[in-house]
Image (cartoon, rainbow, N blue to C red; front, side, top):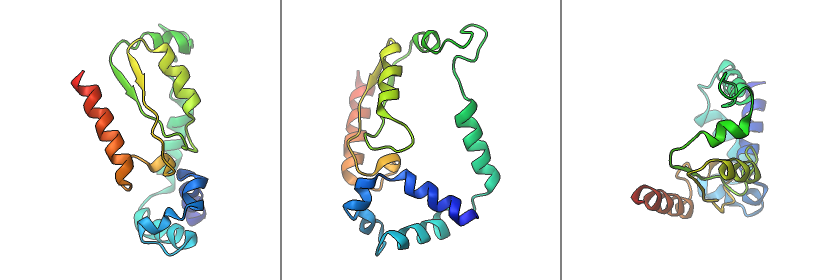
Length: 146
C-alpha cells in the first residue's frame, strides 16, 4: 500500500504536460514507470504513513479565518494580512489552483502574484528545472529589492 500512495502522489505532483513532453529523462529515468519506481524507492523510502496523515490533516484543517477575530470570514482574515507577500503558484500545479491564489491575492492589501509557467507542476520550485529556477530567483530578487 505504501508504494501505491507514493506513486499516486508523484503522478499528481507533476503535470500531464510534463509526462507528454517526456521530461522524465531530465531526472535520469528511462520512462514514466521507471521514474515512479525510482522516486518511490529512493526519494521517499523513509517516509511514514503518519507523515502523510498529518500533512493531509494540515491541508484540510488549516484556516487563517478560524480565529475569534475573524469568526470564519476568510476575506476579512486575508485583508488583515498587511505585510508584503509574494505568491508564486505554478500554472500547472495539480494540487493548488492559480485561481484560488488570484482570489486570495486580490484580498491581501500588499500581496503580489507571479505565476510560474512550467510543465513541472507542483514540484517546479524544487531546483530540477533551470528555467523555473531562473524565473523564481529573478522574481524573488525583484520582490526583495522593492
